[in-house]
Image 1: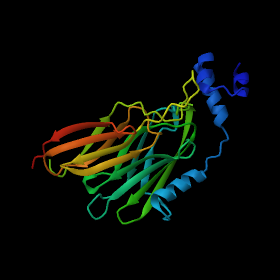
Image 2: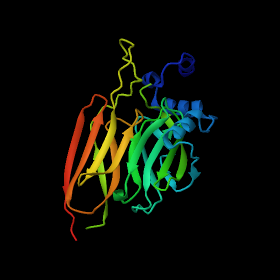
Image 3: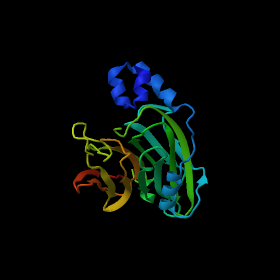
Image 4: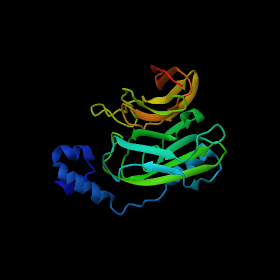
Length: 159
Length: 96
């Protein structure tokens, strides 16, 4: 039944109704194995739109995400940026992108020196396994980025 | 205490309809309706804010930090695609 379901491109949610959860977990890994983990052009384009022509440097940005997310509808994510958060030197904004979602932009968070700490936690949707990218804009105009790959067992976005 | 950095945890009830889902009976797309803006003011000044896209989960949870400077209201404001505004005010007292 499982093989047939894949051939007919039945949504995984329907598949869930037909078979056991254990089978689904295996299907998830099978489908996503060997998938290229590269930044898609869409994310690069979205970053350019957000920060202009500046090329982000690596570092200062830490993403906290599960390695494997069972439910793509709600994946906890926290982003922290190293910064003294003073009036002279603070993080202005953090943009979050997902390279395999229908829309690359996830959210933009704006900070101020009054934030005290450049850290934000939220929950996001992931259609499937992918890279999550966070880009931080500093008050001095510099741009930093961090990236983390997440495997998703059952995708979100209401497929 | 003045100068203390404290965490604010917020949860707002909203379906965050992505605009990508289809009605299973009619096959028509369900129109997008998400909270697209979140704004936090402290003593009348914006200290934290966010622009959201459909990838933010339903019933959005957000936690962030604020540095205590003076006693005053912290106002959390969520605005959705339909223009509906949800607001929550928390008064904080700063000592020292």
